[in-house]
Image (cartoon, rainbow, N blue to C red; front, side, top):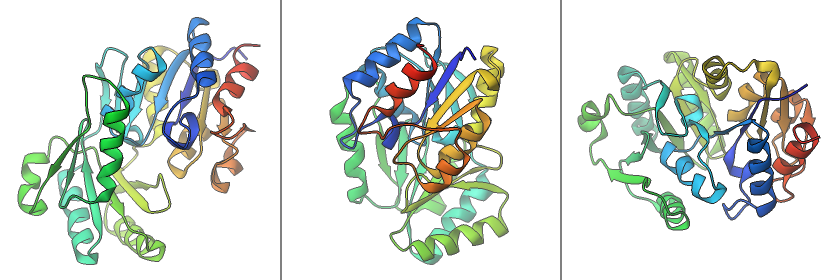
Length: 273
């Protein structure tokens, strides 16, 4: 099979633990691009954060951000966008307040939060790490329910955080029963809520139609729950060696870990040979 597109998750997939990209992975991405393969960054992250990594890679890629709620081309033009339903956003906020759990409202460039916590250190670190005209902004909203109206045309997803896994499961179950939304997770301490049907897999389908690339001609690589749909959709679904078991179960191939240039290994084995 001659693959024409490779979609790559960021954290714990393309990125090492220190949030950098190895030189070996960068060289492999350039070689794939030179061969005419579309390189796609597919992440749960804020779009601005994914966009900034193009400076590290050395060329602009297509970007699937916020778990598929936003797709933009290398020139920052929007191909697809799914703004979270306002009523559902309000209900998620109310549920978070009921359980006293921390949450973030995510747009393309801004993270809105009822309180500044140490979780925002990661955004400061990302901004400092990368040189780009687009930064991840953080805006505090003291009264989310009162200020939500001004955000109704901006929010792509809500991230709910809690170290208590049982509480997260309870919140997830409650939201699934009450609301018509899509819920996934990018790490053990969070759940992420988007419009029903939004996923990285659905985004790959949309982008494939836009570019004229069939699913059989796609490779998708990831490690977490929010990567499962795109790994199942792509013709070749790849799990990182460090992926969770649920991802490995649906993958066609398991590559090396994010600390062992797993992305490079896939490109060399399936694209460059």
